[in-house]
Image 1 (spheres, rainbow, N blue to C red):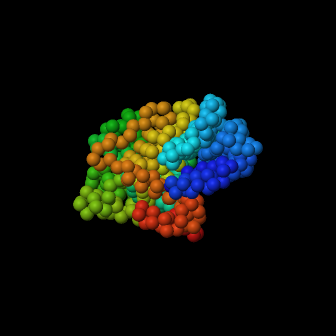
Image 2 (image 1 turned 90 degrees about the horizontal axis):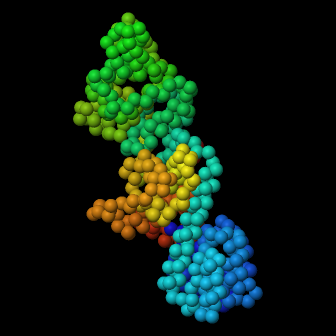
Image 3 (image 1 turned 120 degrees about the horizontal axis):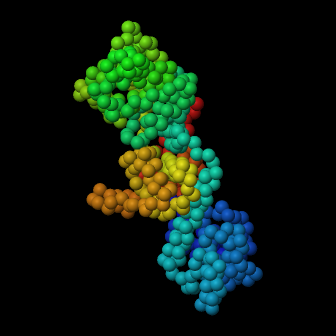
Length: 446
């Protein structure tokens, strides 16, 4: 976790040095200035920290420092240190918008508590500003989002697979984005102007399977009297057939589909001849099809026909570094669709993003983003026996910060340590304890 940044302003150099040392030991990143004018140099509305200033100083006092900061950024927290004789001045500053004031001598616990609250508020302000800025960017549906190595690999694979038109199997847990990946392959390929026929295999009516898939000539049972019933296979001709949850098909249904995939032709009920099919077949499964083959529940020939090219969509738990970006995308999408302004991101929302395992994956995260967009209460996880404790939640949050630093540095450990302002030993102690592999964040050559 990046140490909170604090800009200290005090003309008493001895006290300034002592406070700087105490705050550094307490886990802050202090910047020391002996005058208000010096402290204002380089300070702007993007400053990612807070200001702690003494009131009584020669030249420019702390009250004037606060006023100038307020004119630059009214949401940058300023905490004033005051003697007993300056309380009235500090109260006046509070009325004008100062974050807080502390009376000297102030204990370290009280000081660090006030600074941490201010730093958390500042982080939320900057996050919400970034969110509002992103609101000006058009929201594009169907993107394969995420900067994790796994998602970069998928994006690279999509273009090659789409161009080649090779049949493929997409695996991954429920809600991870298997349908999104299938649509991306169709969209990027030469068949993008043709039909994308999405078949939810777990919702098929067994009694109508042949009619739905293969169709029937006019006058046949289940078909109109004067028109031919076109089945799903023929509708996908020259386009993409996507068999979602293919593990739900029965063995006889699997055999029928296998024949179509291999022969690339379809016999409609009552037809005098087969019609040729030009299909790009994609299938998706959240089950272990290899294990189903071993158990006799899935046809080996169909499995091997589809699994020659297999793409795996990882769970959100496997790519925690993508969660914040995905949430932002879903939130902006929800606000645009519902014509709502972008809400403030609260500490409770941030905590849930950092600590929840998201067993429903992207689908669950999308629903959570919609709830936040609508202003619905954020419910914490049930605190049962299986709920993570404080130590585990903090570890997950810390891991997310380190992974984000590694992602931004492209896996460059030295750059990540500089970004986090951590010494080498501390950095490696943390990554080893948290099970983080820096090399996984390095971009592959070629």
